[in-house]
Length: 256
Image (tube, rainbow, N blue to C red; front, side):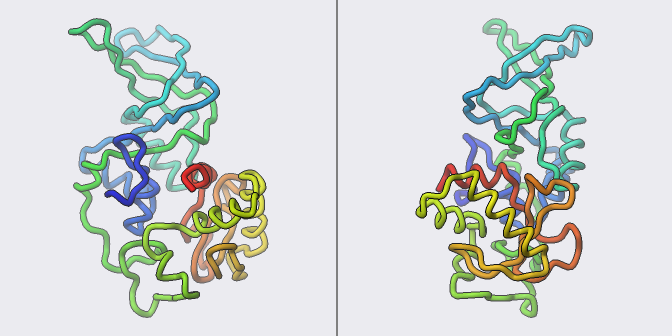
């Protein structure tokens, strides 16, 4: 678990999925079946995050609430909503509800729910690393590139000398980010260029990604502005390949 990007005591669901060569939706669903929870991570923000609080004992009482940095469990209903969204490649958190626990005094803790009322791409889904340890081993043969688990021999493709380096923990966009940042490119310009490359590739044309090498890209059909997809081989289905979300891109940019 040390290789995964930790958000305080939690790890990114996307990173866990990539490590296993599975989709985030599949990993999330498996965790729920094991009785585990999904959480939202709220990192430091210059802007206040607004939400509406609901008290289970007083459902008609609502209050405006500013959500500070931290990790909060999603309600059961919102966890199901998250899984459905992830299955569509939708990583938005607007409208989701999280549990907040506030101490009234040393002996009383009051739980209440907060609904996210504004779109915020810096908020992300995280999981407890202890829960990740409960996951069953993934299939030996995974089709997702960048996974720590081997693909079938006939599916192994080494595009260039960097392939072995990239087949471990880092993803194509992290190599791309490291290269363009050295050139002085701004974050927004780098993301826009990556989108243009995805539009050029359209999943069928191999392009040369700076700092990484040959790859196939395309823009997600449902979220073309905030979700890209990549594969080492030509795309065969509308929703195959691994995702690069704008949120994941921004976090990788901040880490690089």
